[in-house]
Amino acid sequence: MLIGIDASRLTEKNRTGTENYLYYVVNCIAKYDMGNKYILYFRDKPTDSFWNNLVCNNINFSYRVMTGLLSWTQVNLAMACVKDCINVLLSPWHTIPIFHKPSMKIVSVIHGLEYSRMRGGPTIYSILFSDKVIAVSNYTKSEILNSLPIVKKEKIKVIYEGVDTALYYKRSAEEIADVKNKYGISGKYVFYIGTFGLRKNIPKMIQAFGRFVNNYPEFKDLNFVLGGKIPLEYEKIKELPKSLSIERLVKFLGYVPENDLPALLSGAHALMYVSKSEGFGLPVLESLSCRTRVITANTSATKEVGDGFVYLADPNDIVSITDAIYKSFSNDLFFDYDSIESYIRTNFDWSQNSKKLLSELV
Image (cartoon, rainbow, N blue to C red; front, side):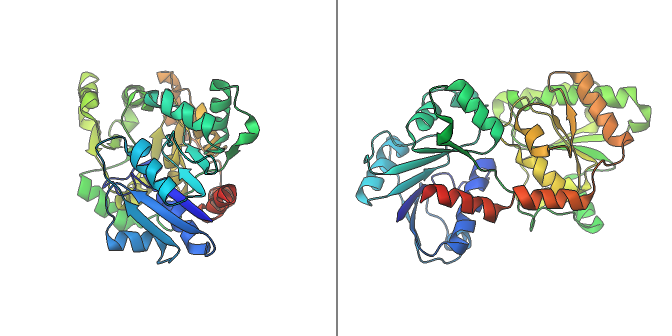
């Protein structure tokens, strides 16, 4: 069987959640599938080292680079799939070619419906006209069925994302000290990592943090460190700490390379990730894998992914978030590390979940 994969964003310099998802899926499948053949479709040529690391020198994997001025998906990818006689197309980006051979099976991965720009045509079309839809959480599946009741629930398969435990594990005191020195972090801190946007609820997290340090003087030197690229339209978020008189305690790091994240997570008192809506919430798992407490929302997929191992807060209630921060300090951990590691191995192993995905492709 010849499987095509839309890898159009995989060579982006600063990969985020969906790009990392596809990287791990391809990497895991390449390690054990020696029977099927694959073509990955790129916008930009991958370097030899990137390609070899991605597919583990599996000769059944090849790639094509396509550029064009018109719609890459609807023109370049559509034509390539016909020319190459693709049997199955895997699309992880919430968009699929409208025109394709009826015999070509399409499997779409839906990471969530929380992005406002994804509530329109491309995502709806992908869900309606793909042969199979992979939802990365039960929450995402329920959102799809609630938004599009005409979709049969049997069409949607829930397959979780995974966490790379070879990368995300508790780092040494020396590694933590080095990364704190690199980013100019001193003392205790709570940490946020992710994109910046309305659904991420960052203003309320900053307000709750300010309320916490003001209400509990013993934590007056606690820092709130936020990692992630801030888009131009969200730059004003940097003014909020000053208006709350906590600017000395709030630090914006900008984009953080993935190799620095395990140490930053390991060194944090807790991850604060109380977003309004998440299709999955990978930072929650990465933090737990680093043995770091997690403060997250009692709604959407983060509650599902955390599954009793996290401190929950109402994302719309500043007092609730403040209380969750306090509980993370006042309560002993209500789980043991062996239980967490077993939970991650059982539910979020990239290799096992990639095999589940492959079974839906073939």
